Image 1 (spheres, rainbow, N blue to C red):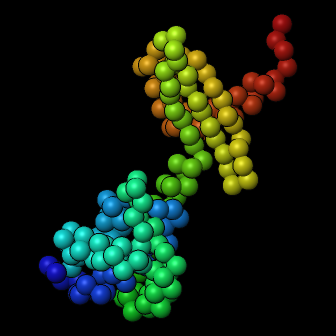
Image 2 (image 1 turned 135 degrees about the horizontal axis):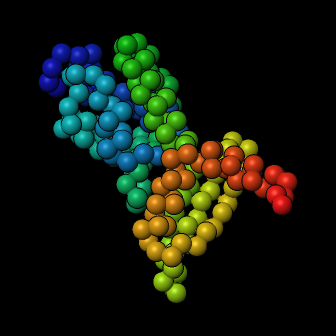
Amino acid sequence: MPGPGFIQDPLELKFLILYIAARVIEPVPFDVLLDLTLCDDAIDYFDFSDCLANLVRTEHLTLSAEGLYALTEKGRRNSVICESSLPYSIRRRCDRNLEAWNRKLQRQRQVRASTERRPNGTWTVRLGLSDDKGGLLDLRLMAPGEEMAKAMAERFRQSPEKLYGQMIQLLLEGEET
């Protein structure tokens, strides 16, 4: 392994990967797991790839057909046993990175925006917003063209709460004469 750092051998790197996989809120692709694992100067891509493949082979992790890695029960048990052997500074760095990533995943779950072409050539824009308790908004709009549909979806993704609040305000206002 290159460079100075705390993670010096493949076993420690496997412990780190399991530590991360146990704390991410949903299965993640290779590049995300790599990014979360590269928290120490001693870790490199090739060592990570080898260790990850080994963890799948030994059934500590699963790899779905969609290319997402998830922790197995065996991996969870071993992660709990081995996490204390990771340096505290590495665990703290990982926890900060994981907190940011998990917030991003949670946000993606709560805000949905998609576009779909209709048979007549127009587009449907579907917007959804939810919170921890359930759905807040499920809205379908028609757009005359793809460019407009994608712009509407992107605008919703940028500030869904603001747009939701404005819609509620418009719906609750009294009629103007």
